Length: 538
Ligand code: HEM
Image 1 (tube, helix red, strand yellow):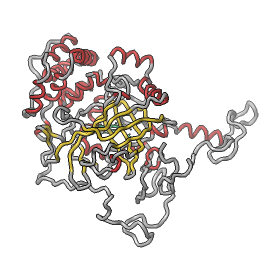
Image 2 (cartoon, helix red, strand yellow; image 1 turned 90 degrees about the horizontal axis):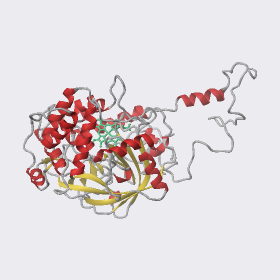
Image 3 (cartoon, rainbow, N blue to C red; image 1 turned 180 degrees about the vertical axis):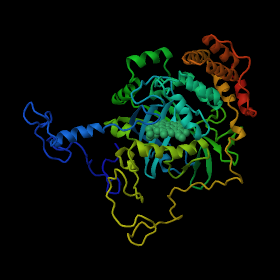
Image 4 (cartoon, rainbow, N blue to C red; image 1 turned 120 degrees about the vertical axis):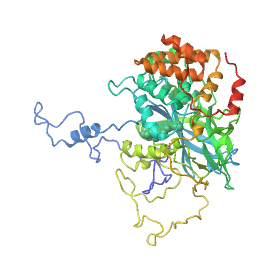
């Protein structure tokens, strides 16, 4: 999958695969010298000392010593597959992106992951799941780097190191592995109450999916789409699994984590191998691109908020089918590098402050994870569109660039004039007007309602789903060693629903708090309050 051959400038040539490794009938050194033995070191006599002049020995062991690269700082454990995306053509009114056109087929690579566990952790733990898709479009690579939960813990990327430090194992004992059952996690989410919504999704059945094939995916942030006429709209992306959304029961998840820690990975692989290709429909919720960037009173730049589908239905725009397993885990699943800033004409970002930090973070981390700035040349990361950049040299450069003038315009190399502003197929940032403003280090008031959406989510659940949520909070909080953390979390739960709070308090053997945490909140959206009234509250 993917272009296996490239021209010296990194462009796919379409020729037969040029396999870097493992060609020829004989075992050789890395330099191609044929070997007659790989099981014995060169020694001075059969029982004598090993000789340092044994190049094969030193090369073999040295390479082995450097086989590992750092695992991802988050989303370290993943499983991936190749497939194809087929546009329905229904997005043309809002986006000019060519790959969304009717029946246009685009190769994709999808990596699913857990967030907190190490590369060797179990699949069925309670956690958010990553759902990252690379679309190798003819206009360049578009990455939709989403999760299976439609909201995020924090509203500003400056807190991302903090929430991850709180969620990863305690620094003193390096436990627990991949579970939210510990003091620092609950300390963080009870002190940073914008995390309440995401945490409730984690404690719901969505935190323990049955299969990657049965998970929704969400772009979470609001994106800006632009059509051929230059008109823009704000959208949220949704992946809907054709198999429906299914979860494990907590007891099943725990048993499977012991008996088959690779359960999700195996399930994905086996389904594809058996020809039961998993499918997701891509859909968008579309909102007018008004200067306020709100919809029904919901701030569209706040990644801790959803827009309920009752207020804005998801409109299908294409179908993704995963059709092929990876053939080399390291080369594909481990070396793939997604980036929310990999955009194509017709898709642009908004000023969501969480997204802004992500636009910086991914390339930065990949420079260290993948050993320098040239990881775009690794086969899985190569664009399928022609690449003609001015990036040169650096660690692990494998392209042999020609010409003398990697700058534009130039009068030496000829060709490829730089047509500033004249290339209609170029990616052009949407000219969004900026309000007259001043520098601030604070969140807008519209980000301060942390509880009405979690409450709405709680109200939407059936009685068994609510029982699962109570059991999840009780199990996880029971692992806390600090009573103050448990008590503060109960106050947060009181703000979601007094019944939820009382049930969890009972499970912890603590009194339910007299009141919740003080509300900083502005009035919740009237549309949301109305919606909540239509659901049962018992
Ligand atoms: C990795 C999703 C927020 C930093 C990932 C991956 C996903 C993801 C799916 C795994 C990609 C893969 O499979 O290779 C999200 C979502 C977010 C979010 C949906 C919020 C809506 C953030 C923020 C930051 C961040 C705010 C930092 C400021 C990272 C880093 C990686 C990562 C450093 C590792 C990337 C790599 O090593 O290739 N994220 N993330 N993420 N994310 Fe995020």
